[in-house]
Length: 203
Image: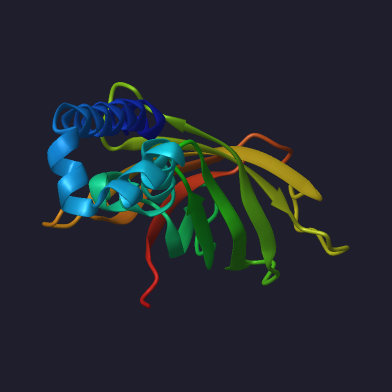
């Protein structure tokens, strides 16, 4: 998947160049602008550093909201549901949900929970790192941590496990990411392997 921070740097430069061009245009036609808005308003706006404030405002809107529209095909943020299927044990399918918090510079999986399986006990999980694959427009890696916080651990389980998710994103016809599918690989005591499937939770 593409690096949003790298893409947004180019976008920010474009915004700055556009606003600088607008400022230069105002300076070049200062008499016409004064006549249009009035000399007092013009002088007040210029003395208050309006262009600097306007630039900061536009960048703030871009970083918090507009980038999701601009890079729609890279947005993972939202609530998701998932299932995991273990390779090493039959009939040990677990389901749950998680949430993705995303900005231009980081992606986090939070509030994750697995339910079901042979232990029939829930496990809590979250990401501890995210890595975009520079060679693929669809692949993303997550390092995760599972916390069980219970006494009746099943065979091979520990209080805390870590592992990796290697997921391919699936986009709909509009380019929006609606599903993820791939593999999970526990690197802790359990060493479990299996399939991971996720889809956006209905609103």
